[in-house]
Image (cartoon, helix red, strand yellow):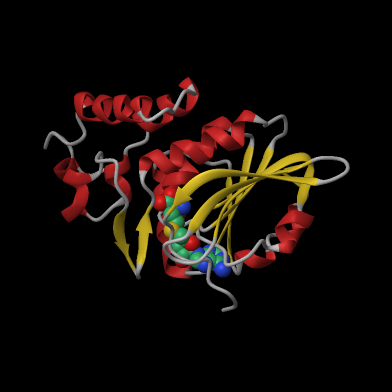
Length: 218
Ligand code: SAH
């Protein structure tokens, strides 16, 4: 962790508390999730030039046309995933800079994460190691395929917007497991939760969101 990034003020406890309070005001209730938002150093996930804005509740560019998710959305998705969580393993699609991964990692046993841009994955692997996060396994690849090897997963979280429900992700979901995924075209995305019941997949809408697209193919 470089010293130049500390002591500028943006890492101060007060700045982070303000973000947490904002998320509480917006309806985030889970203490373990709020605690993670407070503890994960989001300024280390963005370019130094944007570090002063890291604790604003907004998505920010991280290069290569990608973004770091808005803290409220990360909290909302994490909370929704964990509300029904009785298992151990989570599949994450769209690793990006790894912020969502870092928020979730201490709250579950194991995360398997898939990202199509190798360059991002290399940096993120190192970043999470620097933060002493070791229960994450990374894979370059196409998230539409999921990650068969370690399925079924108790939870699946997708942090890019799919044009339709990815069938293979449903197939890799454990009984009782839940999938959190934004679905729909730009400007009309709906955050969707799917619960795998014995006799059916229950689908619940969690509200409108705005993500970069889950790209099809290589
Ligand atoms: N989870 C990140 C945000 C990720 S942005 C955070 O916490 O900030 C979405 C990511 O999904 C991008 O890195 C993008 O490259 C990746 N992505 C898009 N389509 C994909 C696909 N088909 N398979 C895997 N990753 C994909």
